[in-house]
Length: 110
Image (tube, rainbow, N blue to C red):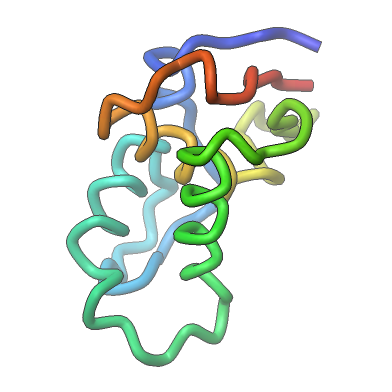
């Protein structure tokens, strides 16, 4: 298990290709997903993928109520993040909004 910084997390490539209002088919980094989410979530009505759970995760982290670290898993065959993506997006949104880092969980990649 490797602890990573917000800067490192933002540059990791994820399994997600099309996301919310962005329909291109390239894999996206966490930074790209944060930008897309921020741009699209307010008008997002068909949440079939449960992407808006990011807001609940973010609220828990902002209030210091997140229990435990954030664990992200990386695919063994291509190295991209394939689990924990929504939690990672919420974490980076907290970092970007200048939440006290002592409230935020640690982030690990396995």
